[in-house]
Image (tube, rainbow, N blue to C red):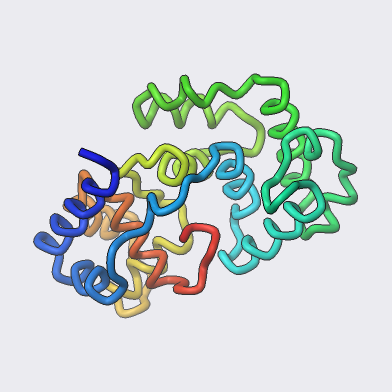
Length: 211
């Protein structure tokens, strides 16, 4: 089954088991998670940039980094590796994020990141490998698995947008506990990544980073 066929199956499954998320699917239409090819390195850069900030802020900062250290809208690994720290910070990055991007650019340009190997790993094994890189924790690894590897059963508990989406849909805007959130999302398996895509539409319909 192709990824597009899997997405249609996911939409049907989610609509059948959860009328609330089903209504969101009906409102926003087909999931475009696999509509465009995302380069793994670009996804990791976007994930680091997006940590702990809004989607709109992340979109703006990523665009500035790509303009200053990229080509044709893509961030270039070697240019990141050799970037001046202050020049990176001028794009809106914290000092920590600037250093992490430098390290990521150096690792990728040197061939130390094996994305083919990561594709062969199961979710938890891939997360463990990515988590060992500076600045890449579990949330960043989960974003990579969803958007670069198209893993369809990931729900990032630490994602602010996802938690906000769940609270809006199931708690009338009131923040829900981890336990209650897990109770809501567990039935979405094996398509929790697809449900997450729709939750991002609820939390911030104008986001470009995770479109």
